Image: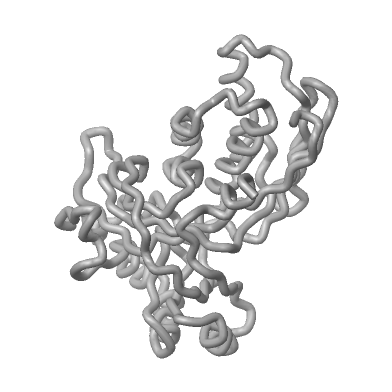
Length: 286
């Protein structure tokens, strides 16, 4: 497998709701959320290279190579293999084709890192388990493990404890306002609700749920509130993650496309269907 070319998706995710139930002594927030994947995202290709030669190509990103999560994932996985006594590895050149914007709440960078870990582990003989990859992923970012887990799930803790769920798989219109949102600023904002009553994984669809970041983001960025109100004219609409993207839920692609025609010019938007099994693993097992 080491000398084969491999192309894999790095799908987007949505947070169907997002609650904060408390704050830990180490400063991290206790979360409850449901992750669902989309059939839309970045693409990562792995090209064979001579042994122990590794490179990374990203023609669009302004992020320095050593700061990119894809490169960090490669370096971290190489170290893990070295720790297992595997000193010589097949070389690879990784190239990413970006479709997901940064700072969108869609998990683009985390998904790229997860696909890198899963893809390289596959090419290098699958010496690490999914659980071991998730542990490495958590070092890179809180959202990386769910992309390695690969199934829609109810997540708790800082987002690393999973209970698989099967939410409906509607069509979504996803729109990104032209704003930059600081996740760190939101987590420290005095108006952020941190006392949501915990819900059970088996009963998450019952009762009222929200994204606790949404009212804070809308207060800080009136353009997000304006766009949300406009989308609510067509369908239920919610913020994903800490934003900035909003997603509206539709029963068919056709109805979603009609709503997309009303999105203001200059805003990034796309239509995708919810997926309860990650397109990454759908591709790997084909």
